[in-house]
Image (tube, rainbow, N blue to C red):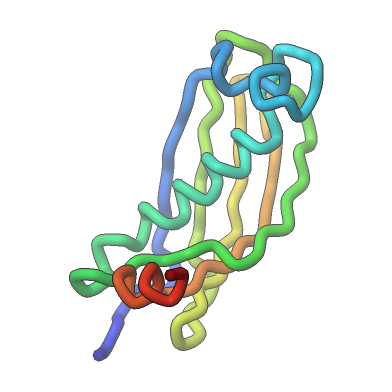
Length: 127
């Protein structure tokens, strides 16, 4: 099966910081600011959704590594925008750089690797 994902593929997503995605809500802190786990989820979602249309039916990607820096806090009411860029395709490994911004500037950055798998076979192995 040949998979052809163009290097340089870009993705973009955004989310509004609210009571459900704060550090306090996630339990990762005690303050009502955008949670690091929420930022990581947004980053992974931006990356995987940017290439999903290039995958054959039944194939998905799973995150296998992420190196992230959460640079700055974002309060409730602000919008966080995330951009991903597919740096390299190496077989079934996809290498992304990702940045997140609010209205004040960059709040986070990451290097992320995703791996292409057959969704049904992946789940079967877990049983």
